[in-house]
Image (cartoon, rainbow, N blue to C red; front, top):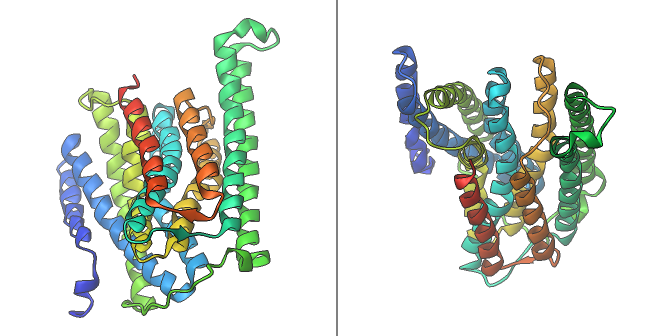
Length: 370
């Protein structure tokens, strides 16, 4: 055990906030103290999740490693979003914001930071051109699908007279039906992408150079840490959502729902895979970094978002995929910069800085958005 202690990430010391959050919950102290304790506790927990999945990735290889990092990294956000959905439609804007925020966070913030961090040591880093082309193509598909429910709702709101056969209730029903169809199609595309990358075209997505590492954790220990950390995240996510709901009701949190969802919830929920992706880029493992960041981005769009829509349907009030125009604009900007920068299969620190600049600009926009 003494040999394992130095290998545990220092940021996981934030797990001390877990018993603090439990104590605050038992004493019915909500609001800002519970919000901070839960958020810091989640950061500490996802750090352990990131380390455990990084160790498992050494055993399983870059493709499975990237998938595992993305999956367990997104578990946190999925749990947070499900608890938010259970609170009713009042928190739907935050859930929708977290979907776009996670995509932007992984594509622009995480991948951009990885390109800068790795590019400071290596002039040029290479990724699979096939993988980049396929993922960018799916980004355009996702953008096209997510735009339709939003545009239907916006068109009706701007000019109801243009739809003489629709009243307000029928228009809302149409948006929900289109959203459910979009969720099912995106989910099917995710399953097809898994089959493509893990079975039929695995050879195209494997990195050209392999990095041989020796794991410091055993498979059993890594799996145990993963299980316990996921359980801890489930509890902390519930208290996190409860604290957000309390702060919104009291008006003491002077932030818009959009900023909370797009920036705060997304950053907290995606901290695990983000740190791993940035760290491995420094060791010139840009393929793994790309698999983690882009894999997490696509998993949010093709798996997390559809699951949340379907889950809300079973809860009795389907959440429409109707996003704010600024959210769609930010996603379109991220897709365009990814298309132009990743198509050559090479990355450098300046391209990473461009990714970060776009993310910073839209974060400011969401901060000031009413």
